[in-house]
Image 1 (tube, helix red, strand yellow):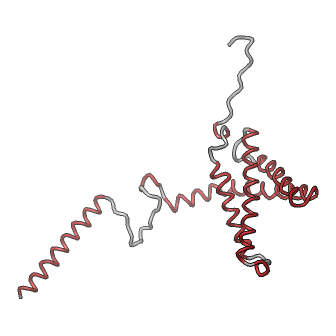
Image 2 (tube, one colour):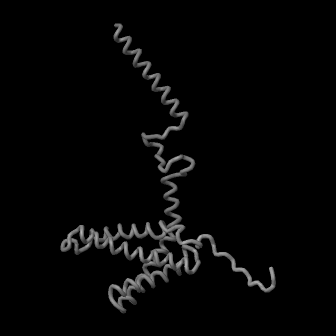
Image 3 (cartoon, helix red, strand yellow):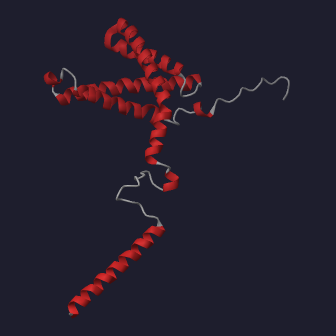
Length: 196
């Protein structure tokens, strides 16, 4: 290295290099789940009798999906801008403050912007914290249900007591041999009945 060259910066970690790496699991899926949760809240809303169940559920679902999409998009924007890890809670706090201020300003003016920014910061960071803490539990639960995909060759692992069993090649050959033997016995039984 020549003494006049500036020192080179280290490259950012691979997990924060691209916005498009995990956009489905970090933005789309939470937005979809937010819409589903909003529809559920609409089902139990006190306004369902006045506005109709379908209308109020659709309204709540849309609003929850918009709020979740704005928050998750802002969180990913902050993550890429800060070049930080996906599980950094500071991203959640900054995104909650920004998206809450924007949506609150649209909803209720300056006071609404302040109020919503505080609410989004607290709730968004709390939800992300709980998600981070529950992720290992959910992963182990998913693995216990689905098993090892590569080992079994499928995504569904049936319990041992199930009458439906996936047969390997040896078991399938043994089953076919039993069926041929049973067919032969039935055919011989029918022939002996016809002869007598």
